[in-house]
Image (cartoon, rainbow, N blue to C red; front, side, top):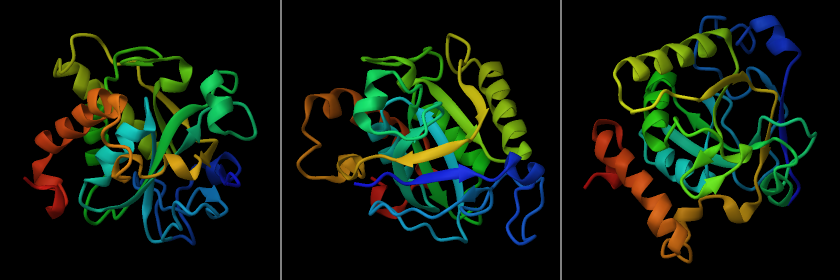
Length: 232
């Protein structure tokens, strides 16, 4: 597939998170077209411009993608790559560790149904944010924990949530999640999209031992905001 890029406007339009003046600079829920240029050409998603978007990295994108797809208000989740210095990305390059891109996801959501803060709550359950450059058996910078903010409000909120999780001693070790500005996001190849939903994949060893336990943990902890079809 041709890789599509969501590149930030110059310095996030000097910190403004608005499109056409419809959103204040204090808004944590950045619209899908507010601080990024271009539209996705991937078959994975054609973003609704009324939606907000969160860019996150928490290890293998199969796991985080499936976890967020279960949250009410999330319209779609796109697996991809972000955070590196290379001007493009694909699975082979990113897996080699030479691009410094991380496996990441773009979460498109309706901010009237779920907030950016609530999505960050899910994020810190959907993966282990205390293991530096590692998630379980996956080791390397491409599996790091990162929050890619688009507005100053998102940056402040992300750091506040990290302080809250650390203060609550949810994990035995401190959080090592990076909070960095979004520079670009590249869609992953089509075969990575909706990976756990593909009936040919759920019984793989990795999926059974690594992916599903993370997804089930989110389902258990966030029953109050699960989509009806995932309530058990």
